[in-house]
View (cartoon, rainbow, N blue to C red):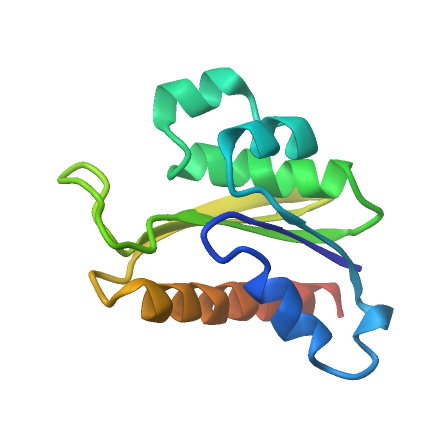
Length: 142
Protein backbone atom coordinates (compact mmCIF):
# COMPACT_ATOMS: atom_id res chain seq x y z
CA UNK A 1 0.00 0.00 0.00
CA UNK A 2 1.12 3.54 -0.82
CA UNK A 3 0.70 6.84 1.01
CA UNK A 4 1.59 10.29 -0.25
CA UNK A 5 2.66 13.44 1.59
CA UNK A 6 2.41 16.45 -0.70
CA UNK A 7 3.07 20.13 -0.31
CA UNK A 8 3.69 22.02 -3.57
CA UNK A 9 1.74 19.48 -5.64
CA UNK A 10 -1.27 19.66 -3.30
CA UNK A 11 -2.58 16.17 -4.03
CA UNK A 12 -1.63 15.83 -7.69
CA UNK A 13 0.27 12.57 -7.07
CA UNK A 14 -2.68 11.11 -5.17
CA UNK A 15 -4.99 12.19 -7.98
CA UNK A 16 -2.75 10.64 -10.64
CA UNK A 17 -2.69 7.33 -8.79
CA UNK A 18 -6.43 7.27 -8.15
CA UNK A 19 -7.22 8.18 -11.76
CA UNK A 20 -6.48 4.51 -12.46
CA UNK A 21 -9.37 2.13 -11.95
CA UNK A 22 -8.63 -0.37 -9.21
CA UNK A 23 -6.07 1.84 -7.50
CA UNK A 24 -7.73 1.15 -4.16
CA UNK A 25 -5.74 -2.08 -4.10
CA UNK A 26 -2.47 -0.10 -3.85
CA UNK A 27 -3.35 3.41 -2.59
CA UNK A 28 -3.98 3.78 1.14
CA UNK A 29 -4.18 7.57 1.72
CA UNK A 30 -2.74 10.96 0.89
CA UNK A 31 -1.77 13.94 3.01
CA UNK A 32 -1.83 17.46 1.60
CA UNK A 33 0.30 19.49 3.98
CA UNK A 34 0.69 22.86 2.35
CA UNK A 35 1.59 24.78 5.51
CA UNK A 36 4.26 24.13 8.10
CA UNK A 37 1.51 23.73 10.70
CA UNK A 38 -0.07 20.97 8.62
CA UNK A 39 3.31 19.27 8.24
CA UNK A 40 3.82 19.22 12.02
CA UNK A 41 0.24 18.29 12.94
CA UNK A 42 -0.43 15.63 10.31
CA UNK A 43 3.02 14.16 9.67
CA UNK A 44 4.93 14.95 12.86
CA UNK A 45 7.56 17.00 11.01
CA UNK A 46 9.70 18.60 13.70
CA UNK A 47 9.36 22.38 14.12
CA UNK A 48 13.12 22.38 14.74
CA UNK A 49 13.73 20.74 11.36
CA UNK A 50 11.47 23.30 9.69
CA UNK A 51 13.17 26.26 11.35
CA UNK A 52 16.68 24.90 10.78
CA UNK A 53 16.40 23.76 7.16
CA UNK A 54 13.17 25.30 5.87
CA UNK A 55 10.16 23.56 4.41
CA UNK A 56 11.93 23.03 1.09
CA UNK A 57 14.70 20.69 2.21
CA UNK A 58 15.59 17.04 2.03
CA UNK A 59 15.38 16.89 5.81
CA UNK A 60 11.72 17.94 5.75
CA UNK A 61 11.02 15.65 2.77
CA UNK A 62 12.41 12.72 4.79
CA UNK A 63 10.29 13.54 7.82
CA UNK A 64 7.21 13.96 5.63
CA UNK A 65 7.67 10.53 4.02
CA UNK A 66 8.38 8.85 7.35
CA UNK A 67 5.40 10.64 8.89
CA UNK A 68 3.12 9.42 6.10
CA UNK A 69 4.19 5.85 6.87
CA UNK A 70 3.67 6.33 10.60
CA UNK A 71 0.22 7.90 10.13
CA UNK A 72 -1.05 5.28 7.68
CA UNK A 73 -1.19 1.56 6.99
CA UNK A 74 1.09 1.91 3.96
CA UNK A 75 4.41 0.20 3.40
CA UNK A 76 5.64 2.79 0.88
CA UNK A 77 5.38 6.57 1.00
CA UNK A 78 6.49 9.44 -1.20
CA UNK A 79 6.80 13.07 -0.18
CA UNK A 80 7.16 16.30 -2.14
CA UNK A 81 8.04 19.78 -0.92
CA UNK A 82 9.23 22.54 -3.20
CA UNK A 83 8.97 25.97 -4.74
CA UNK A 84 6.66 25.77 -7.73
CA UNK A 85 6.73 29.52 -8.30
CA UNK A 86 6.47 32.19 -9.10
CA UNK A 87 9.29 33.43 -6.99
CA UNK A 88 11.95 31.79 -4.96
CA UNK A 89 15.27 33.16 -3.79
CA UNK A 90 18.96 32.84 -4.55
CA UNK A 91 19.18 30.23 -1.79
CA UNK A 92 16.01 28.34 -2.81
CA UNK A 93 15.14 29.10 -6.42
CA UNK A 94 11.89 28.51 -8.24
CA UNK A 95 11.72 24.96 -9.49
CA UNK A 96 13.61 23.36 -6.59
CA UNK A 97 11.71 20.33 -5.35
CA UNK A 98 12.75 17.89 -2.63
CA UNK A 99 11.45 14.32 -2.63
CA UNK A 100 11.41 11.58 -0.03
CA UNK A 101 10.73 7.88 -0.37
CA UNK A 102 10.18 5.80 2.75
CA UNK A 103 9.58 2.13 3.33
CA UNK A 104 9.61 0.08 6.48
CA UNK A 105 13.27 -0.72 5.66
CA UNK A 106 14.47 2.90 5.40
CA UNK A 107 14.27 6.10 3.44
CA UNK A 108 16.07 8.21 0.86
CA UNK A 109 15.77 11.77 -0.38
CA UNK A 110 16.76 13.79 -3.39
CA UNK A 111 16.47 17.30 -4.73
CA UNK A 112 15.63 18.09 -8.33
CA UNK A 113 16.16 21.51 -9.89
CA UNK A 114 13.43 21.76 -12.50
CA UNK A 115 14.22 25.44 -13.06
CA UNK A 116 11.85 28.37 -13.55
CA UNK A 117 9.41 26.52 -15.81
CA UNK A 118 6.37 28.25 -14.34
CA UNK A 119 4.10 27.01 -11.59
CA UNK A 120 2.05 24.55 -13.64
CA UNK A 121 5.02 22.93 -15.36
CA UNK A 122 7.03 22.59 -12.13
CA UNK A 123 4.07 20.93 -10.40
CA UNK A 124 3.50 18.60 -13.36
CA UNK A 125 7.20 17.68 -13.50
CA UNK A 126 7.29 17.07 -9.74
CA UNK A 127 4.23 14.84 -9.95
CA UNK A 128 5.75 12.80 -12.78
CA UNK A 129 9.05 12.47 -10.91
CA UNK A 130 7.29 11.32 -7.74
CA UNK A 131 5.39 8.68 -9.72
CA UNK A 132 8.68 7.48 -11.20
CA UNK A 133 10.18 7.25 -7.70
CA UNK A 134 7.16 5.27 -6.49
CA UNK A 135 7.35 2.92 -9.45
CA UNK A 136 11.06 2.25 -8.88
CA UNK A 137 10.53 1.69 -5.16
CA UNK A 138 7.49 -0.56 -5.71
CA UNK A 139 9.48 -2.77 -8.10
CA UNK A 140 11.80 -3.59 -5.21
CA UNK A 141 8.80 -5.09 -3.36
CA UNK A 142 8.00 -7.50 -6.19
